[in-house]
Image 1 (cartoon, rainbow, N blue to C red):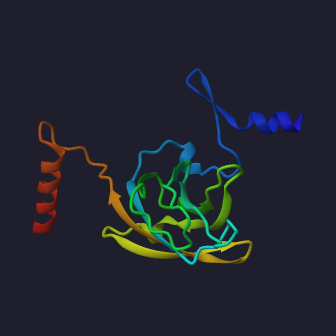
Image 2 (cartoon, helix red, strand yellow; image 1 turned 60 degrees about the horizontal axis):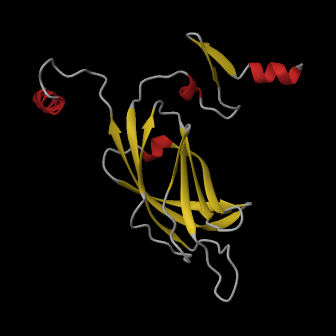
Length: 187
């Protein structure tokens, strides 16, 4: 009976439909459907001294990055055979942010063809406030794996605030924003 009750608690009624709620790790912001307050753009630049996951004559890894913000998940491209990868394409993603208290998880994996991808290192529970700069902000993240160091991941982030104010009727939003900023500067 307890198992059934726990499963029942993960459903809610919306209109005449049942929707399944997330697990116990689900952000409350994801369940309340608030409008987004901004967009966080994250650019994965490079890894430095990553842990080797493929062993042979020359130990290496085929790293890729997974970023999770709330229930949004994104995966970068794979850089083959490198412990100091540089991502030149497939390395930027925009995330909608609904609450400034949301957290991000960044995980670096080694791509394996015939088996499960190996975790190289991670940074969990990153406070998004640290990444919410209006100008591009470079950050070095120390990766950890089983309590030990696993290299560094260099990222850039930029915050784009979404305005809750609707544009003036009949005026393109970009022009309205320009007028608003001119009015704010005049005050």
